[in-house]
Image (cartoon, rainbow, N blue to C red):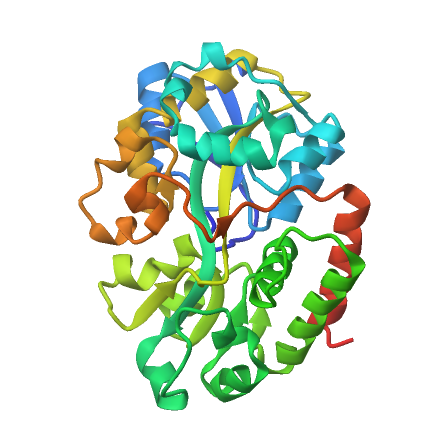
Length: 360
């Protein structure tokens, strides 16, 4: 999930004991973030359809994008980050989805769908929202208060101001390993357009990040374990990871903030690879996962927000209503959606991001 980034592996899920071999057409090859679907959903699909799911997982968005770009995966269905979709379309690595064949897709939150398509219009017909969240700041209230009595808890300055980062370095700072999201956050902190691609703005963002890099313990997509084990006191993190201490440990120690300068709203989406071999299976699995009861199970399991309003109402845990977006059902300011960057621009960001991480 946008949680623990385990080593990519292939898992064969079968109902009950080991099942006899089934025909290829009765196997669905699914590529997804690690830990980003409830096991009960997989078991229910297999019991209901008699089909077998082969689940291959990944831990970083770039890994999934590269693998789908390479073709020949054999995947029937994949989940990718919203930042990747336009590049996958440009590379003809994914194909259009016949939404009329996915009945449950009609119930997807139109506010969320419109916000996504306004930012990435070329994705219409190619991607179906699955789960979503925000990228913000999670902090240990006691540890931060001890070191920063007047800490700006509602601001990116908590981490991006070098004076604050220096004081928090001793108790641990991590930053999610997602260059597009972190650069956008740095731009928002600087009062600039989070989607700017001007060289001046990009240079300013990396300068801001370089100023705090000596105080950062790691740039990591696997922040789930650090938060669960209380190894850090402040992090730039995905909400699905940041909510872990509250929802899974019932701990008030960690708090999650969506900074006032602007916060990225991300969406993970279903896509069908261009070389998918079983389109019927792709659509059948997608439609099953988008059932309100199934999506509610997965949202509970992942700590992410669902793309279906009906599924959201099935939560009793108030922690999952912590986002203003989730509460209101609309996308208020200062939330923004990361607009797509071209392949060459993304490669340059990746190069500078790697240099930042190794201290150059």
